[in-house]
Image 1 (cartoon, rainbow, N blue to C red):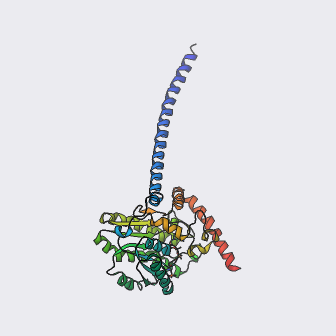
Image 2: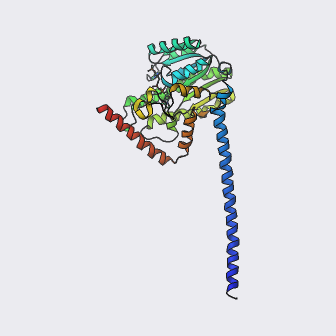
Image 3: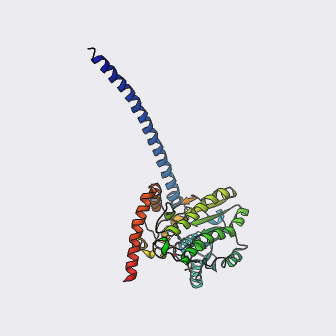
Length: 331
Ligand SMILES: NC(=O)c1ccc[n+]([C@@H]2O[C@H](COP(=O)([O-])OP(=O)(O)OC[C@H]3O[C@@H](n4cnc5c(N)ncnc54)[C@H](OP(=O)(O)O)[C@@H]3O)[C@@H](O)[C@H]2O)c1
C-alpha cells in the first residue's frame, strides 16, 4: 500500500501538468486555425471583389474617372495592343507608342474605326537611350492623359545563364524595361497630380515574385517595376493617382514563343485579349495584382513557396525549355 501511494501521487501530478500542456496546445491550435480562417475569408473576398464583382456589376466609366486619353507603350502587339483595344472599347482615346511605323498606322486605324475613338501614335525605339523621349514629350504635351500603361518590355530569346547574355541585351533590359517606365511616368505624373486624377499601370511579371534563375536580368527588371509601383502608390495615392503593379504569368504572345509549352493558349495561359479584358477590369481596384484570376492562384502559391523550392523548380523547368529551343535551332 505504501509503494502504491507515491506512484499514484506521481501519476496524478504528471496528469495535471500534461493537461495544462494539452490545454495550452489546444489554445495555440485554435488561435492558428482562427487566423488562417480569417485570412482565407479575407483573401477570398478580395479575389471575388477583384475578379468577379467587376464582371457582374459592369464597367466603371474610365474617361470620367481618369481622363480622355490613355498612352500605351509597346502597343502594336500582344498585351499592349489588347490592353489598348480594351481601353478604347470603354471610350478612351489612345496614343500608341512602338518602333514600327507601319504596325502603328495599322493598329491606330483599326482601333479608331472599330471603337470610334480618337487615336494617335509616336514612333519610338526605347532601346536607344535618351533619343526617343523629346518626341514623346512633345506628343503628350497639352493632352489630358488619364491613363499610362508602361507595357513595353524585352525578354530573352530563351531562358539562359547570365554570362550567355549579350551586352546589347543587358542594355536593352535596362533601357526598355526600366528607363522607359521612369521617363513616361515623369512626363505624365505632374499633369495627373495637378488634376488630382489619373492611373498608371506598370506591367511587371509573375517571375519577379521570387528570384528566378535563367531569367535573372529580366526578373530583376520586373521586380524594379513592382517596387517602383508600390512605393509610388504611397507617394501619390493621396493626390488621387492610382498606381498599379500588374504581375502576369505566361500569356500566349510573340514574347513567349521561346517554348511551345508556354506559347500556346491553355488553362493557365490566356490569349492577350482574354488577359487584357480581365486586367482592365482590375483598374482602380487593386494596386498589385496579376490581373487574371487563374494567375492569382499561381501567384499565391508561388509567393508562399520556400525560395529554394521555387528556384529549384524554375531552374529545372527553364533548363528544359532552353535545351528544347537550342535543339530545335540546331535542326
Ligand atoms: N507574354 C508573357 O507571357 C508576359 C508575361 C509577363 C509579363 N509580360 C510583360 O508584358 C509586356 C508585353 O509583353 P508581350 O508578350 O505583349 O510582348 P510582345 O508581344 O513581344 O509585344 C511587344 C510590343 O512592344 C513593342 N516593342 C518591343 N521593343 C520595343 C522597343 N525597343 N521600343 C518600342 N517598342 C518596342 C513591340 O512593337 P514593335 O516591334 O513595333 O516595336 C510590341 O508592340 C512586357 O513588358 C512583358 O515583359 C509578358
